[in-house]
Length: 455
Image (cartoon, rainbow, N blue to C red; front, top):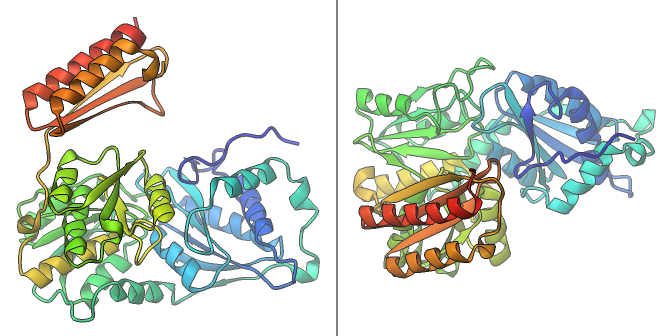
């Protein structure tokens, strides 16, 4: 028996390709464990769908996972390179028992990842992930249930998967909406949306200028996409485009560029569409879900329209959990993951872009004119610490934080938290008075430094 180690992070299994845990050997074990989780004692053949982005290592991992699943008597449907939200959609619509995405999102091509969706299109719950981890660590249970020679699973390619997803994307908009007269630049990040992004825009009538739409296995996210906006900004200016769309490598997030070259991020999308849906009576519970990192300007813009902002911890899985738990239908992150639960179970960069473009087409206004929030100044201080002493155990720090909150008096916001990956305390203060928030951030940081900082 091998030593058990934690495989799953906040968003599946991640690492450098061909190094543990992103190896053929571990991928095969993950495929076996996933298939075993979904075996049917009644004898009905189960089906698991596998999609990927454009990374070179995707071929290796796809083949290994496919082999593991088939060895357990479960069939595989292969859909090739498609955005992560497309895999979630196809898993649901094709009645697969689970979905697999091979992608490391916005990371460089050397990295890769494996994440699973349940049959309803949501990420597997923590308990199921722990069971899969245990089966990968100790294969005795899975080994006893390998398929007989006459019951090994089959694999086939689904040739019309992209077409199915295209039809779905268009169905998210009213039939009356068309993008005739709009010139749209799109940066596909040389990733999973390199075909579907330009095609859906063209089918809706837009004049499309596509960049970073020629993947070669190693250029995914390379100086392009949602985390590198210079290329799309330059394209919008050069082509005199009405709007720019920048997706990330797996297509689940988007950043937009307006006609003046200014960024329109996830907070901007939630402000615009949260207010719009509320005005139409279509915003569930009159609330939007965002993380603690969303700008206070979003909160003010929504409050002005009578909409509540509910905050979660960092990460789109936390947003999705809150949305499912309380039936909210709009939520997301500043970084461009926006979830429209009426249509999709996960962030979908193209749905977000299409919703915003629909507002431009229907109103006849530019993206800059549609901007619904004003960003509040923000100060972020990082304090290097020797240990993560709970803030509740530092009375002086608590007192200074309480005093700062009184001084902001509802016209600002502060957040003090420890980094999950580095020995840092992060102090973030937002407010209208730039000098005041800088002073408050420095006071809190100094107090933390005194109690827990490095010598």
